[in-house]
Length: 209
Ligand code: Z5A
Image 1 (cartoon, rainbow, N blue to C red):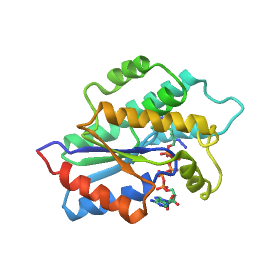
Image 2: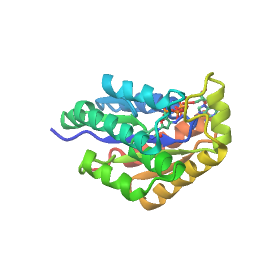
Image 3: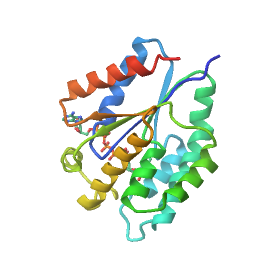
């Protein structure tokens, strides 16, 4: 049985990850590709509990290193229980954020060292990396307007504009460093155009090899 494809989707708040995962699901159904949809932080009962700790606004917010370790703890559980089994069983995995988010938020946004993130990445993931990463690029201000329309802001969404500018810029750097895996899509376009660009990308990249 051939291994499933691992697709991650990334971007700043409100860039349209959830919206476009729906389009990816429809695409895969149309191609008769078996898949699971999951997210980070989260994806298992335990990892979802860690997610709540991470997003909750609290007087005792996690320190930067605590945040990083919690994210990788959730990821270790998610990989072991959901991602690896699915891929090994020939199912594709669509993941709403993965480790590029850690490089972008904890590395770019918080300023933690890339070498520390890379060390944890290697410890937790071994060789596991997404086959394809879609980066939805959007002016963070526009993303926050979209996110705010949904109601209460989580702990990340209360960060300053400067934080999100760094996150965006880190994502664009990741795309430059990983041109075979990462594809940037302009998420400031209409929902229909973003969707068309994603389907076009999947047609070109997903069914190759
Ligand atoms: N985090 C981290 O720090 N480190 C890590 O390693 C990981 C995560 C894995 C939760 O992530 C937080 O975890 C995240 C980073 C941190 N920070 N925050 N906040 P999340 O992915 O669950 O949360 P999110 O980024 O806030 O996701 P989101 O706000 O749900 O955004 P989205 O899924 O990208 O957007 P959406 O729900 O599809 O769209 C938002 C609205 O915009 C909605 O009303 C849509 O109808 C609308 N929309 C979408 N596309 C368009 C276009 N093209 N035009 C107009 N309107 C649109």
